[in-house]
Image 1: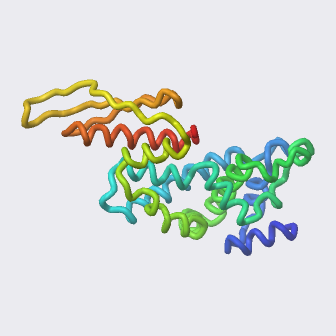
Image 2: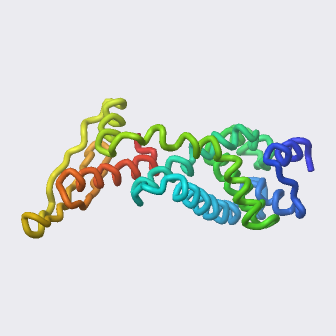
Image 3: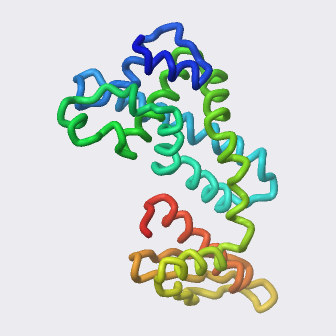
Length: 227
């Protein structure tokens, strides 16, 4: 192994029994026909599962929507690329000449994909527990911080998020109200025309339905990085 790869193994605190898994994980498609895209798929899957499981245990009172939002903030491209930079992963990824010349080793998408492939390599080499331990080590700080920005209700967070970026406020409207007066179900729509986002929320009150809709909008924003 090259010195950068040896350093990477020391940083992640894992030594490979079969270095071929690591070599493939660090090979971009621009460098070889045998590349890391399949490993990216596997790494993304195990990463999402481990993070979801940790969040489920960490926030026992969180709703499904809240857990989805927390996970989206942790496994999005920018977060993965940030962690990859701390590992100096870009120095280890094999790139074709064109990608090297264009600075591909600094590109967020390549770094994020490389990190997912690295996680898959550990999974294939050492099994689930080894991959889980690596993910928790890499995301430990992020997991501790995840709730600090999510203390306010979804409507407030969405409004503040849009205002901070000088976007128009979301528009809420009632789609359906069904049931007896003492047992109604509301379906509310949240629309953000500037971002081409239209989502729905259902709740036992108008307010709860609006919160659900705002929560759905936040998930889309986090996943797509629309703003």
